[in-house]
Structures are given as C-alpha cells and as structure tokens.
Amino acid sequence: MTVDNAMFGGLYPDLKQCGGLVSSLQQTLRSFGASLPVVGAGMARIELHDRFSQVTTALNDRMFFFDFWDRGVALGTGRTPDLVCVAQSIRTWVELRLRLSEMTAKFSFVTPTAVAESFEEDREVEWQWASLMERIRKGEGLSDLLPFVLAARERSELSGLFPFTSHATFHLSRCTGYPYSGDCPFVVLKTTGIYEVFDQNQTCLGSGDPAQAVQILIDNLPPGSGRARKGTAENLFS
Image 1 (tube, helix red, strand yellow):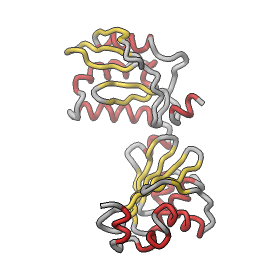
Image 2: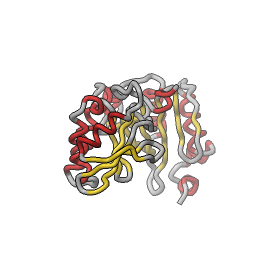
Image 3: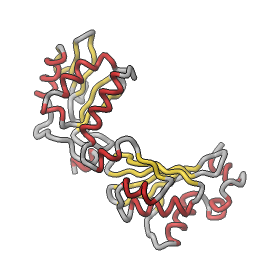
Image 4: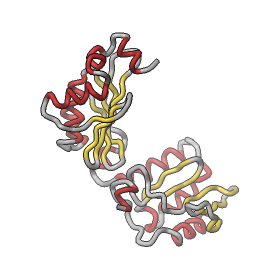
C-alpha cells in the first residue's frame, strides 16, 4: 500500500488537496513564516546547514513520523497526527536550532534517542564505546570481538575514536556522524583469539592476538588521528 493510496483512502485529505506530503508540508511551513525548502518523493526532507529532519506517513492510521538529525547523528524522533505540529517542531529544530533536551520540553511528542544526552554533552565517543561493550556482553552478536575491543579501549590512541561494527567487523571513525570517515583500518576475527587487521582497500596489514592486533591498527591510523570530531566524513574532509 503506498502513501498515495493512504491519502485517497481518506487518512490525509489535506495532503491530497495540496498535492502530497512535500507540498503540503512546504505550505504549512510558509503559513507561519518559515522559508525552509522541503524536498523528496514520498518521504519529505527539510535541511539547513548541518541539521535535517525526514517525515513519513503511516498507512493504516493518520500519523506522521519524523526525526531530528544533527551533524550526522539522529538525536530524536517524533510522531503526531497534526501536520502543523510536525512543521512547528521541525522548524524549531532545523532553523531555530534548539537543543534536543529543549525540544522534548517544548513538544510532548518528541522523544530523544539513546545517544542524545551524551551528544549534547560532547560525550558521544565514550557513550558509543560503552554501548558497544554492553551489546557484545549481552550476546547481541560479535562476542568473539570482545577481547579485542577490551584491549583497544585501553589504548589512548583508539579510545578517542568512534567505534562501530558492521558485518562482524570492528571499525573506527575519525568523526561521530554518519557517513563515517572510512579511512581507519578495520578488524575481523581470524580464528579463536587471533584477529586480522585490514586497510580500506581490503589489504591485510597483519594479524595477532588482541594486543598485537591493536598495535597493528594503531601503527596504520591516518596521520593526525586524534579524538573523533562531531560531523560526517564530508565535514572532516572538506
């Protein structure tokens, strides 16, 4: 079932009248003086500088779902059947640039993500390491990576970088937002207790136990690697 079918089914007569979600949201924003451009097809996107929000509609009930991004990190979500509330909250986020903690106080339908508080206190790197460790320890996959992750976290050269996993591999980023930097070596489990380190061209840089693999990774970090910066790869390399 498509969004258009939902509109014609009577859930979104206002959207139907205006020609769809994008045009209806644009018109609503303009009605209270916001000049933010709305783009997209089906999903609407409102962006200004390093912040953006995306809006979609439910199919079986009238409900708008939207999010609040800052420098490549999703800090909050919202849901409401009222398009005016959608537009007001997004304008407040994207154009007026309130903090997510202020957004939740102002709009009852806005919910912070798990990382929001740490991000706004510049602790997102520490939060990410702790979150990754907790997920591994709880058995949410990648338990074989735990000895390596424990060793990596103890090294100051790595603990300030932003860790994440993808397809059973361990990665680091020099920025905290997505898309990540993509220029640090990554690690995979070779066999029990032995880890392989690869560069971004899939070339093996060496292998060894957790301490050895950590050192190989450190020795092949990009020059000048330090604490991961807020922003995305585009911000990092621009």
